[in-house]
Length: 120
Length: 226
Image 1 (tube, one colour):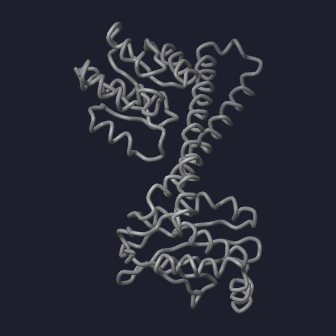
Image 2 (cartoon, rainbow over the protein chains, first blue to last red; image 1 turned 60 degrees about the horizontal axis):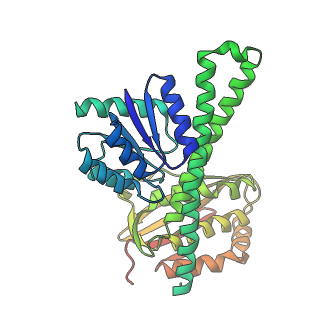
Image 3 (cartoon, rainbow over the protein chains, first blue to last red; image 1 turned 180 degrees about the vertical axis):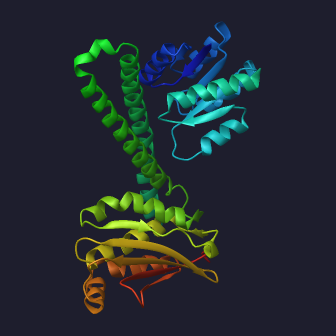
């Protein structure tokens, strides 16, 4: 399985990628929206895990562009707020699901599997 | 509150909310890093065999503290966002629960435990349209008044009732308390008592001493007129 993790917190995203690799999931990493969109074009992942709050292109804007560029690719959002507001907003824009930070890796993997299955 | 005070509250709210987002990122990095250590230990336990127990104990402590940190950060984030709108529709039971969680430390310094009674079915739903910042100020002032009037130790129990279009928030002290008249004297002599009365009036409500118990009743309208 190949996924793309997008988050401007480099230490978070690279450590999470390492943990996913240990579980047999190949994780590409992008630390901003532009880099994520480039990677989706050059090395398409099966799913994108996308942080909502990022400098430059915000997560919801990146989500809109992913949906325009590659509508079949499921996106799971990572939200930082204590409430579910951003996650729900993201799902209205086409996100498959959302998780609140800090995440639980087993829950993330479960959501990845469900989203990919639902997309197939 | 005047326009300047509104802006000051909004400023503090915005900065605090921003910091809580950063704190969540810090906690997320700590969580993933300790998670990676756990993963490595589970696939190659021989690498740290002589310290395995110590490592595992430390990882459990880190996990527990991350959980505590996340809960506090979520509470602080919600508190900070309460200044987003000067007037909004809120859930009173949820607001009391939230305020209790962020005020526990102040109670703990006096060995007092803050508790909330489950909402009575007849009070459901517990929504009201009010000024969320001032409502929290009033609830906190009521807690402070009770903490000041009671001796160290005990419980402050907060319950919710509703009659017609008015909510009654009962802040009741329990435990080894002074006599009722001494309690009332302590309470009304405390500097926060007139503050609480003013905030209650600003919220188009009122505050009274509880007739039967050692405590305060805060009356709030379901909807502000102005």
